[in-house]
Each structure stands twice: as structure tokens, then as C-alpha cells.
Image 1 (cartoon, helix red, strand yellow):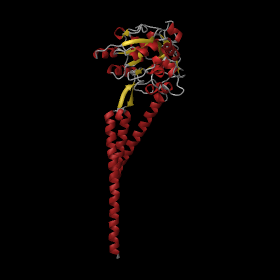
Image 2: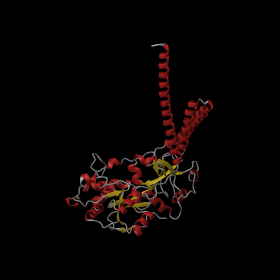
Image 3: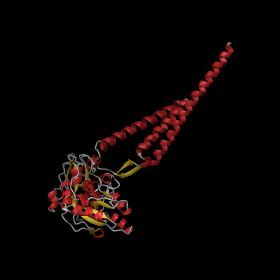
Image 4: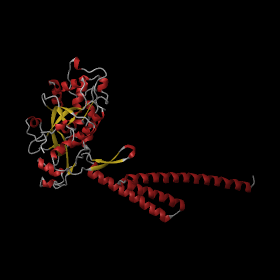
Length: 414
């Protein structure tokens, strides 16, 4: 092989290598720009602050790649500045979020519902022995659902009355919030629910569907307000609560002169039992819009939804005594006396605590024999013992049904 042939082959080899390198670079650039465009489109679609930072960073990366390709020094400097700005802004925002909210855990996420799962080993359900005629068999076993706080009550009934397979089936013993279970009841997706009285909207939805709620009271509980354990405020009046949730009282110093922090008053989703109870407490006083926060929904969608309670020193939340003291078991919060009365079982029983709510078994279609068996057991001494040992105040032996159309809870006086 002479020198000219060798040089020719050498040139061909370097041309091939150069083409391969250019192909790889082109692929990487295409991938980078394609991903950048997707991220930018996502950020612009959802219009949230982290998305804007992501957009700025992606644009910087795209300009940087262009600067490297075309050897544009100025272009590269601009791109470096854009990416650095995006990183600093994102870091500052993340730190601010952690400082204001992130270091305060969402209280509701601490509830251990699995401890009340029927037939699970060592569960905390109240155990009762029922006669054979009250055990449910066959194809006519009703599907039950209920509010989170009432799950330990109706799960205990399922464990006592249902076949184990169905008691462990969430289609038969569901667990959802009040805003969901009323819709399921009206749609025929469940047969009976355990909940607080329906809201005005839920009453209207039943009327629109040509249905009416048949309600059987079985227990009572205190509607409570709670704050961080380090909050110096030791109690609220009903009028102060109305002032806070209407937006007229905005700083704790208006209640406690030595505590100068803006009140962070959390609410619950519309249709939930506690939010409906707050609305009854407020009467004709309008409630201010709830705090919102961004959450990731299906298909990556950002949903602006009602914020969950975060236990900062300035936070105020509301719930029910059993939920707050038994299910949450959180020693970082304290329940506040209302109008000078503490939310204790004794004060619920003697009627001195001002805000008490009633729990009901609710149906909208004719009750079957098996549904009546469940209600009868719940109202029997055994069933009321379940209510009491779970942590609620039993109602005794009330009249079997109440029409929801006349429901106007005397426990919550506007």
C-alpha cells in the first residue's frame, strides 16, 4: 500500500467518524430540544411557579446547546445566566415552602385506618357476639360506606355480621369522605352510609334525583377546634369562631394580646361532614374562601384544591373530638374549649358543650331485611356499646327514622 492510498483511507475513516459524531450530537440535541419543548408546554399549560422555573431552565439549556453548536460565546453566557437564575429561584422557593409549610406535616395523613380493618389480626375494632339469626348470608348483603371518622363503628358491625370475605371487601365496607359517600348513595353504588347530616347541596341533589334520605341517629360527638400545642390561646367563643372564618378576625392578637401572628384558618372540602357542620355553626354569616394549595392529580394535572391542615403555631383547624383524639392521636395539637366549655364526653352527655353533631345511618331506597338487621343491632344495647367503646356518645334508643327534609340540627345553633 502506497502513501496516497493510506492517506485516502485515513481521510475516509475520519469522515465516517465525524459523521457518526455529528449524528450523535444531532440526536442528543434533538432529544434535548424535544424534551425542553414538552417541559415548556407542560409548564405553560399548568401555570404554576415551579413550571415557570422549569421553563427558564429548559430555555437556558436549549440556548446553551445552540451556543456550543455554533460556538456563540455570548449565547452560552446568556444561557448559563438563565439556568443559574432558574436554579436559584427554584431553590429559594423550595426553602420558603419548607420554612412556611413543609416542616409542618399534614395532620390528616397520620390516621392509621388499617388498624380498624375487619378480621385483620390485632385490629382495634370493638368485638361483639351476635346471635346466628343476625349474621348475614346470601346475595342480599348491603354495601356500606361511611365517613372516615365513623369507619371504626360500621367496620365493627361488618366484622360481627358479614362473611369475612365481604367484610374485607371495600366494595361492601367502603371508606370515603362525606362529600363522596352521599353521591355514591344517590347513584346506587352503595346501599347505606354512616355519616353526619347532609349539607344543603346534598339535600338538593337528592331532591333532584327524586329521592329522600331516611336517617337513623346512632351516636353524637363534639365539633371541635384545635391549634398547635404551643399556641398560647386557651379557648374561643362562638362569636370569635364566626369572626375568624368570616375574615373579620385575622390576627391572634385580637384574641390573645401577647400572640401577634396572622391566623391561618384551614377549612375542609365542600360537602365534607365537618365543613357542613361549620356552615351550620356560621348560620347566616358568610364563610371566607378556603386556603388553597396545588396538588398533582391524574395524568399529571395540577389541581388547586382546599389545603390540608398543617400544624404551624398560627394554624386553626376543626374536626370532631373522636377523630382528633382517637384516630389522629397527635400530641402536637390541643382542643380548645368553646364558650368556656371543654369538648369532653361528659359535657356532650349533659348538653353543656355548645356544638354537638349527630351521626346517622342514611339510606334513600327501601330498607331490606338485612339493612334493618344492621340498624337494629346498632340501636340495640350491644350496638350502642360499640358506639360508646369506640369513643362516641350513644343516643340510647331513638325513634328509628328521621326525614332529612326536616333536618335542622338542634346541636348547632346559628
